[in-house]
Length: 369
Image (cartoon, rainbow, N blue to C red; front, side, top):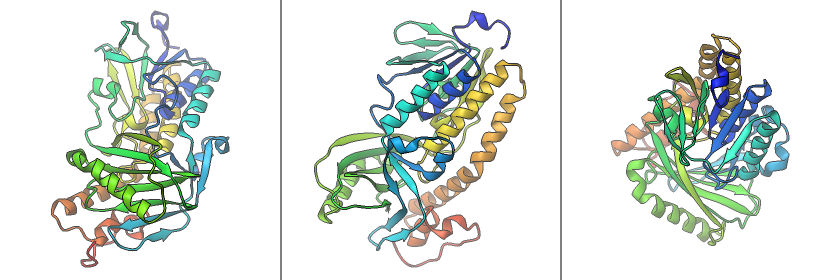
């Protein structure tokens, strides 16, 4: 470890115990690093602020996902305005119990030796990296990890806030028909976002995301979507749960900075790793959290190259997909702002269509959405 670590409360202080923070805490603690991890929630994963879908590839990073899986997903069905659905096979994934998922990751961090504390709110982050808690306690560490979501206080403290977000709202309702796909609803009524129905056994998560400037319409748009799905006999009207939150859609932020002598590392949504088109961010949180925890331990052990190597690895893993998504999102938003959105714009802007992946594809006029 670096010299004078005894003057600190711990070696690595993690803010946020979602998937990114829990994985960072576990990875750092495995090497014998003294880790304290804090979260403002009273228990891991609750309240849920998530559509609860994870891609199949996450199974390569985490074992034992069957225990938190509530339904397997085979395909994606996309609806552009009032057009018939487009079903895309081979879009596999899992609908999970997000609370159980987060709880398990925190348990892994505790087993590794991390001191995980819930119901703890950060009041301020000082210019030297010291964290002031709402109860007046102060904590400091040579490495501070920001895993505290899209409106990260850690990111703001180092001048790296997420400047572009989507506001979301979601309800859980009874699912009246068995369904094996995630449903996506693309519409000019949802600028900057989309609507969704994600089946989860006997219930479904139905939600919508929208750019902040249009947030006043979000409740009405979601209510209309639920009403339409009820009219189709797909879901029931009883609302079993509400949730919502922000998703960063501006792309990846630089992963490391300094506050005085304190190294500051960002991961997950705090690092802007959610996909700007789909909003998906759980897999990125898990992967980036582990890399950040490992880099923190390596730096504390004297590996001065570990932080630059972290930045390079995050860039290699995430930038190709994020940059494509940013370009597609920008193009679609431009056509929406001009009031000239057509079906081809939506197709080029959504991952289920070949046009999204074809850098040479051109939007074809016609087929008005």
